[in-house]
Length: 490
Ligand SMILES: Nc1ncnc2c1ncn2[C@@H]1O[C@H](COP(=O)(O)OP(=O)(O)OP(=O)(O)O)[C@@H](O)[C@H]1O
Ligand SMILES: [Mg+2]
Image (cartoon, rainbow, N blue to C red; front, side):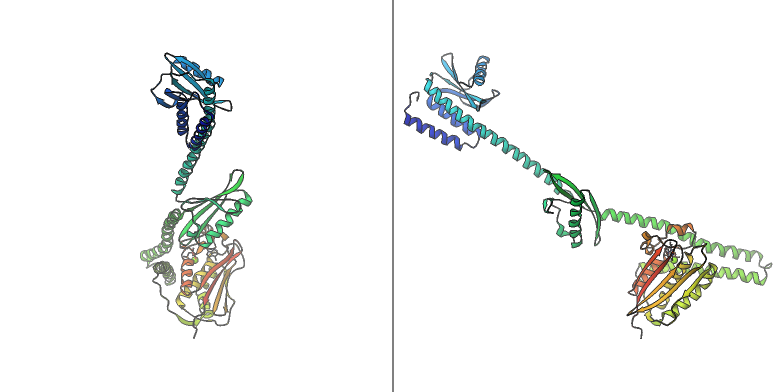
């Protein structure tokens, strides 16, 4: 054994040991090297490395027993940071602490038949010290590596969860750069409109520091966009979540249609019942007492029956038109005619209704305006619009009017129908063109109607390639604009 050693030999041992421990990539290899070098100096039967808590980290040779007495000795070595040898039966047990910066990392125990001279003991102590330095670093390193792996695993786990979300999720830094995005996130799958809205929303969230939300319609799809301010390592960031809410919207739409249908059935039944009740009542009276009725009364009653059946007919015609338009079965029969003349004639036919409601009808345009269109359908549109002006006039007001103005503008004609009636709140300016929609107040006023007039008018106007819209203010009045192409008027 090398209990007595030349300095040259020592140098070569030391350098090969240092090389070995420097190459050790994990604690196990390092302890191997340490045990090996020990065996070069001391003839050992067995050699054991224990950690701080006296757990066996590594063992070579026969399993040596560590009894309570030995444990006490080991504890003493650990506390005093100095090696010790003690006899055990015929053998000796050498205990070396693995100490680094005053901290004990464990001990090395060697069972041997030899004693160790002081010089060798000092040398082995140095090896033990060198091993402890590297051991601590390796343990630190592997614990860091474990932490890093745990972090990486957590990150992958979170990413997998976020990837499985149907939402598009991304996190932006202050320069609007994406620092995180889940698999579904890709602005290129949206149109330019959404992409620019997202950018604006993210910037607004940074500016205001408060949550921003937006609903965007693109094609047949609806998206809900939420931008939430968050903080990461003291830096403000924005979490963006885009959710496709098309299905929810579709359900809402179907529910609304369902509701409208229910309202419509109630409404239309009422609409049909009123004239029918009158027809029935007058017909019954005539049947029961035809001999007692004088010619004039009889005439009056029959007139009412006739008028009410005309009303019934017009309601049914409206429904038929509506269903035709819905099924896109309405065709236009275009002729060239004078629009001013048609409007004049239409207004004349409604004059009686206007008079009964004390509404003055005025046609401001005198000169003829030729257009090529379906005369019957355009008349239907004008009838409904003027009728609305009369129907939705204010009962208590004095100077009630419905005014019509026709103006040719290039290859278009603009018809304006204005009244000073009840008016329509701004939020319903577009809704009144939807089927069956009626503003609540008109129902309170018990004005008859099915809520189809404007829908039919809009569809007829659009079939002609024109536009219809309105301006209105509650309690001031309404102006409906109809713009039609002149068409080939020759
Ligand atoms: N000139 C107007 N002034 C005030 N409200 C109006 C006017 N025109 C339309 N409206 C409102 O718009 C709703 C829809 O009008 P629309 O002509 O489509 O149906 P309606 O008049 O109720 O029934 P219909 O015309 O089918 O007999 C009306 O119920 C009313 O609430
Ligand atoms: Mg109407």
